[in-house]
Amino acid sequence: MSDAPRLMPVDEHLRLLLEACATVPRRTSEVPVAEAHGCVLAQDVRSAVDVPAFTNSAMDGYAVRAAELVGVGDRPVVLPVAGDIPAGRTDRVTLVPGTTMRIMTGAALPDGADAVVPVELTDGGTERVTLRQQPQVGAHVRPAGDDLSRGELALAAGTFVDARVLALLVSLGHPLVEVVLPPRVAVLSTGDELVEPGGTAGHGTVVDSNGPMLVAVLREHGFTAERVRAVADDEQGFRARLDEVLLTHDAVITTGGVSAGAYDTVKAVLARDGEVAFRGVAMQPGKPQGFGLVRAGDGRHVPVFTLPGNPVSSMVSYQVFVAPALRLLAGRPAEGLAGVEAVADDGWRTSAGRTQLARVRLRTEADGPHATLAGGQGSHVLGALAHADALAVVPAEVDEVVPGMRLTCLLLRPLPGKESLA
Ligand SMILES: Nc1nc2c(c(=O)[nH]1)N[C@H]1C(S)=C(S)[C@@H](COP(=O)(O)OP(=O)(O)OC[C@H]3O[C@@H](n4cnc5c(N)ncnc54)[C@H](O)[C@@H]3O)O[C@H]1N2
Ligand code: MOO
Image (tube, rainbow, N blue to C red; front, side, top):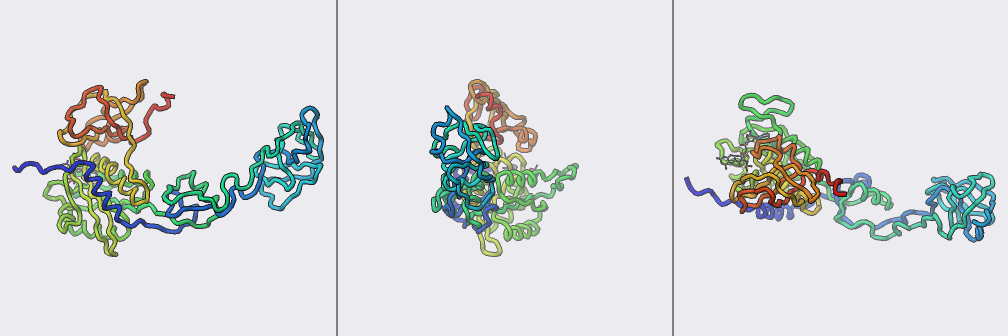
């Protein structure tokens, strides 16, 4: 046997695929503002209006001219109530000198009024009201444009529209906005042995867990994802299915068929014309990797990620390589999982020369997070993957973790027990 081929460091494979994805045009579109959630703004957005659009009350109470209430406090003042201004009243109202008006939170302040006395500081009268506080000018008043002035830059291009940004965006007076759309990703599992989800594995078969798993995590990450029915190890069938999905998607993830076996269809088909570069990456799990920009029938070059079939390898590869690349396609920073440092409470041996991403449980102690193995570390062990809180990164040059060692742990879910630090 010849020497094993050199494995590419994790960072280098990541860099190569991010560089390639940076050349792919982003998919942009003008969408109704309320539908921009989950997209990235492709343009700066200035406010078309003052926000709030009109000066209004911050409290349920009485609109007054503050100067008319000088001295109130020692001696209550009684004023006639000239009317009601509920929120939603849109006609222009003037406060007649020597009177007050009942006003609700968010209702337009009448012209002439410059303060609001909260109802709690009155007797709540509807014909006449006794006011027991002298307000400052501007008390409980929200001036027009207090939040944003018309023409002001409210949101910069590149901002991700989450729920809070959406609230601001829809308030700016624009019906449409130009956004980068999240990529549409197809997940294509391959293998003769695959049984459709919902079925039961028998002798020699396995349920396609990669398909549902990857679609689910893609959706959790805000991408549009579709599982394509698993294809058998048949070169023509695989090529035909791939060509189909390339036309309708912005990225394709395949699983299986990329190692050294006699029936490794994905590799056989895509390595032939050099469309995808297949290489071993110095990582455990996730050694056999492939990536390339594959030309679709309509001329677009679509990123294709060929992940290993072992389920743990598939998920880890997705988190380390695919998710950052898809974020880039979505117009976002190419970020991966956030890391925390944890103390290893277990010891274990790792494959020398490969960065290990061990599945660990985390626990927060008084001195910070501690990690223990979540279970078996084989690339097929779904139980440990499901129960893991994080992927502990054991550098390639370390071949044994000893208890007490500090490891960076990439969070698969929020750090448990963090509230106990409070
Ligand atoms: N001689 C060698 N054999 C293997 C090597 C190697 O370097 N030399 N690498 C091993 C490593 S590491 C990995 S990882 C796997 C990757 O294999 P493939 O990507 O070719 O995947 P398959 O052989 O098709 O399947 C591997 C394993 O995963 C199961 N599988 C596949 N697809 C699914 C799915 N959609 N859902 C659930 N489980 C799936 C499949 O049944 C196999 O058990 O290769 C090693 N071998
Ligand atoms: O790289 Mo494989 O993913 O070790 O099992």
